[in-house]
Amino acid sequence: MFLVKVFYFCDMTKKYTQIFFDLDKTIWDFETNSQQTIAEIYNLLCFDKRNIADFAQFHAVYETHNLKLWEMYRYNKIAKPDLMVMRFYNTLMEFGINDMPTAQAFSTQYLELLPEKTAVFAGTHQTLAYLAGKYQLHIITNGFEEVQFRKIQNADMRHYFIHIITSEEAGFKKPDTRIFNYALQLCGASADQCLMVGDDLEVDVLGAKQAGMDQVYFNPQKLAHHETITYEIAELTALCGLI
Image (cartoon, rainbow, N blue to C red; front, side, top):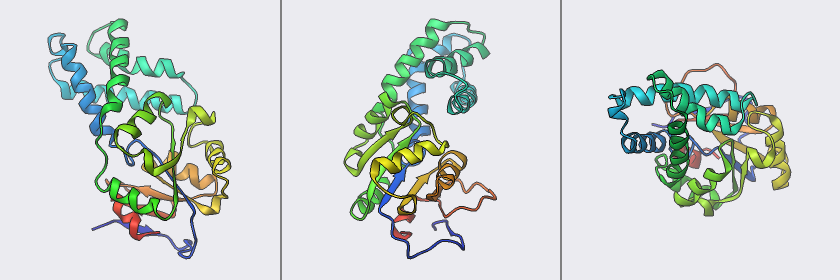
């Protein structure tokens, strides 16, 4: 059963012309693809012989550091090159491995292999094909420009989208309203014509709300919250019957 929340202020007669999607964790299955990539590099670098015998533990430590550093990057507290390497260096340090060259090698291989992965969420192609016949579709992403286009291309999704808007291109990162305003200007649309779909309540949904756009919170884990938003779904295919 789909989880669909439609709040009292929604105008169900509203005619959208543009739909913006976040990429990672919204349509492209970042967690599955990333974990597979890290496992491949973990085995390639023989970490099981370097006092890191448990991949699950290694991955959990990496996730902690990655999330922390991405939060800093989102608010311009760390530079992109530092994020790319320090998430791996800090992880290795927790296992007593002070090895910057290995961290740099891990980073290089990760960014090379990750975009080759093609896992997407259930119903992604079905939903995008349906919506592309009715609306103009676009991506707004904070992800690194050099990998985001490859992810979309390799997952056979490029033909659905008119604009792929990256934070590096726009000069601002979600949830900064300026990246949403940039997207509106690029598409020649007003905020009330647009809908933003994303998995991150703060970054995608509330960021779009602040910019005056309606929002769809993609919440497959059904996480509890107290925010007033436009729509909420647990499965992407629910979008087909929602708008």
